[in-house]
Length: 158
Image (cartoon, rainbow, N blue to C red; front, side):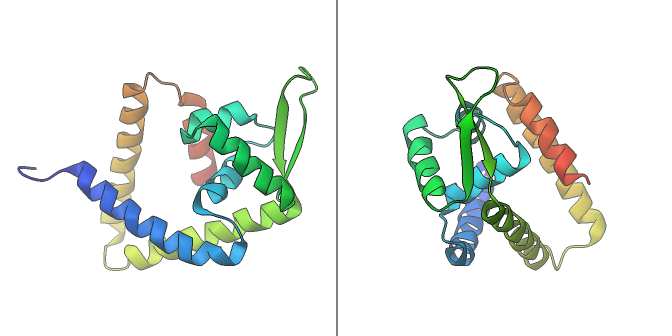
């Protein structure tokens, strides 16, 4: 990898992905970050805002603004935690669930386009390497995301 940076490649891929998503999700009436908040809530029904802040690594104030918008658009429900009334738990409305389902189609469409010239074995090898990188990043981060990563893989391996 002389004179090459993995970080640069990831940044370029992310730029293209964000651009693709931003264009396509404008029909959904949500922003890129709002979409990923919806996806997190969809995968973690009954989660707390604190969990979202930790997993998506966004500022609590930013998340509060996002949640307010999503509530206004009737995409999420917010209620008090039955075990501790000081805290809220979040879930998706039917409209929110529909957006998450449509976003999955969008992601698979992007994958299909981007990976169309790559053979199946190479794609599987790439996915395995990406999983290793995610686990390594989690390890470097002190293992803070263990449960979220486990739930993530349970979801995508179905």
